[in-house]
Length: 113
Length: 116
Image 1: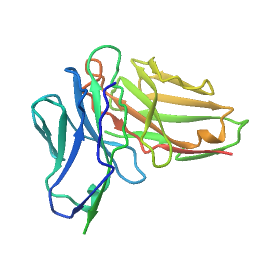
Image 2: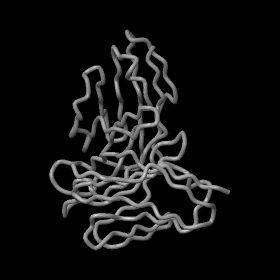
Image 3: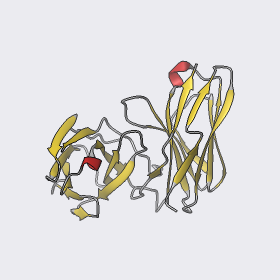
Image 4: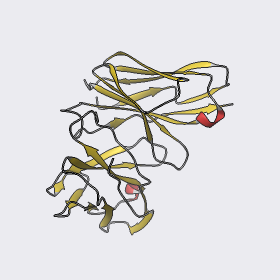
């Protein structure tokens, strides 16, 4: 499975944008880029996913580099509730993956009031 | 209803006990998953069921025995566990569109297991 590399931790102030980077230099053409987050004492929560084009949803935006070797999750206005561990995960289409998610260490996001 | 429920929330068991964890979803999802999460570590996949059949077993010891009685229910039977098996056990489900690569997985809150 292709691996992802994320910074261990990042900090932000409330109501400011946050850019969470992820490197995936060995990504294959059929790997979808998924982001999940895990708030304290909760199960992980889906945030967004994409393949090649940038994606937006109500929670965040996903910017994917042209060569797909990196991506950035963008939280447009951080709130205290966004403090969580953010995981960047590659999910391979085809074969027998059945949506298998392999979580890396993730980035701990701290949001200051 | 976009919720995955797990019972019990907490479980303490001895090494000779037999217990079961239960997971339920009513979203019509056809894939269900068990993950194990140790403290301050990321979740690790244990099992995947697709269309009520075991599709993936990540080389999990046989003291963990999954069961999918129907498309809404997933159980994890526990027997002769070790103290190092103490962890948060997370259940998830997804629609299984295609082979699941674009699925959004919905996670339950987990069962915190302590093995004495």
